[in-house]
Length: 88
Image (cartoon, helix red, strand yellow):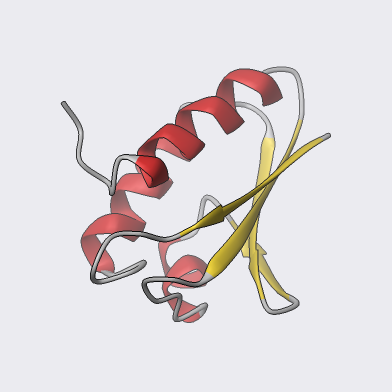
């Protein structure tokens, strides 16, 4: 299992488009992915779960990944967040 804490830097936090991009990226991997904020943990492959966190700019979220491709998964998801959900 790998874990990474990240601060959301995009203005709108985990809004619908950002949540959809996160889920689309997460679903490329076999590993189990969870996202947490202030003790609430949700399935990282569920758009409803992610949006229910209500994560805003400046808040720290934790990504946990457990599975055969965990290193690649956490790297891809962290890059997505660090790049403010902009895919180049």
